[in-house]
Image 1: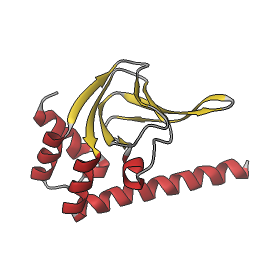
Image 2 (image 1 turned 30 degrees about the vertical axis):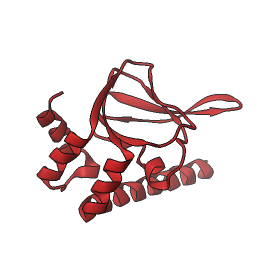
Image 3 (image 1 turned 45 degrees about the horizontal axis):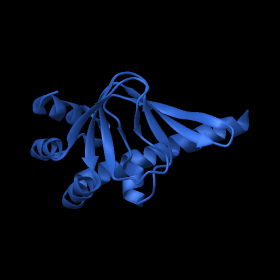
Length: 148
């Protein structure tokens, strides 16, 4: 994928909507593009959270290793970001991430993401809004599960 395609994907990602086009281009230049085959691990539970990822193409699943075995927590696809929670909280990865399909991601290292957020209030607000929406969805799902 070329730089212009990466910028288009950034522009279409909910978390980056409204970000200045020059900042989108800078973000694309500061990151690296990686590809994975279906079934390959992108990152593993317990590793340091040294980067966040934007899915350029494909789908991933989150896997939690438990004493009872592997538990699939959910999936994400093109245009979504993952790994930013560990970066922001400075915590190890909570779950492993595996490619469900052939996968192309933009890896945004921790320093680059934090620098972009520090320099751009609009991006910081977008990340906060996305994380708040996830909390609401989790609470709604937990409420629905409890009600049944």
